[in-house]
Image 1 (cartoon, one colour):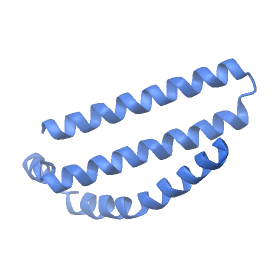
Image 2 (tube, one colour):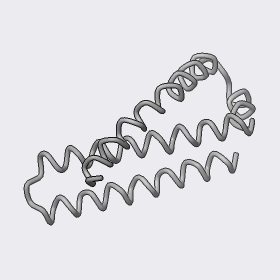
Image 3 (cartoon, one colour):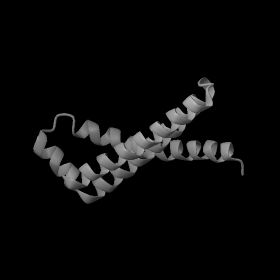
Image 4 (cartoon, rainbow, N blue to C red):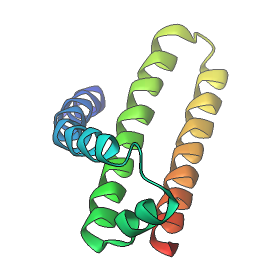
Length: 107
């Protein structure tokens, strides 16, 4: 399979998988809208919520990274600049995902 096809397929699969996670996130955000800090801590201390939220963050960053690299491919003509932007974006996504998941499991 061609690399571009794998990338396209990964974008489509991750976007499809994000739909139920986004529904879960919206429902829980609405229920926690007027919550105080202790209610939010109780919600985030629940292990299934931590796992689901971590998967949501991971999928969101995978989708974000792949779609932004497609924008770089389309609009940046200089190959060196495009490769540097892609590498910085992937590094940013990995670091931010790790920080958010580690912070979430630390609560």
